[in-house]
Image 1 (cartoon, one colour):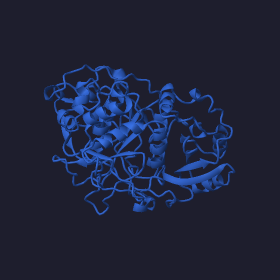
Image 2 (tube, rainbow, N blue to C red; image 1 turned 60 degrees about the vertical axis):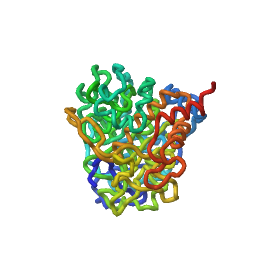
Image 3 (cartoon, helix red, strand yellow; image 1 turned 120 degrees about the horizontal axis):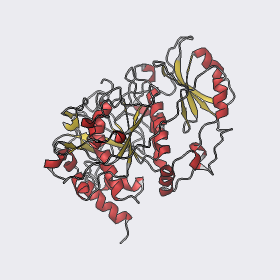
Length: 467
């Protein structure tokens, strides 16, 4: 399967080191033993977390911990004194990514505060600025007109919306307003043009950030992310309306089109940290990892345990802080490797399989369970000939894959979050599983089955709201 061919499946090993010459630079992760010297304090979280992020934590009774603190600037300085540039920072992983040679890394490993290092990828991009910080994600949500919920007004989007009874939520006025959705992918070219999403105002173009090339725009690269985004965000009355056109979207480019390496999982984990810090509620990642360009990084089935991949671990941390992370289960159901990919193995990821037109498992949709027997996928949505805006923004395409079923579900979760804002992330996901078509007998093919978002809404009202 090629990179970003609707669900990207690639594997890495956290212990393997690729063959690099001593003089050749690669990207390495350097983990620190503690956060000594950080100027931030858990008692003053407003210095490093947004108001939205703090409110989300309060809803799930999650305290601010040392894990939330930014890394030690003293340790950063010590790394820089070795002649290395800080490429990325991770507070949850407590470390930095640096371009370095093997010889330089030998010196780094001997520093008393360094407790973990691993090779992440070859160095494929040059950067013109040093240690870029996250961009400003203050763009407003789109101002889109309300239209009647019908085949006539929703156009090509109506079929996939109504198959999961999402049209009922839209009729009640729940179209994602007030919900912040992050999308992780390999690029989003063209979305700044009015014809793509239907935004009339330039300021409504989603905030975005490129962790791969280290610049402030993700509106380039692979077209895969743009196709994924359109299933949720598009608003073209009489032509195509997505599942959550009123949500606010923030876009992260985490995938490198020049090859598959474990760096993409590090990017994913850091993007989750950034999304958490600014107050994102919900994440869609139509990504997965099983095999890599560097085969020494490949995963085996035993690694599908939710504890091996940096991305899977980060999903757990994001969920604990009140976020929902929706991810594609994978497109390998018809291959020799038939199982889900990483990070769909994460216990707290909401992993989505694909259904065909008859609401049966699409032939390509990956099977569960995880290596330790956790039922996956969680649910399955439409994944065959899903309506999406063509990547050039001109016309429609019919796309296949769990890369499409995942954002369809993500958009409708955004609608649920708007409809029942007092519900926690766990309550939202429990409601979706409990009202899906196979709620009483989930299996490894489609999980709990096809969601019924009208039923999930009623379930939440009974569970959360008091008369």
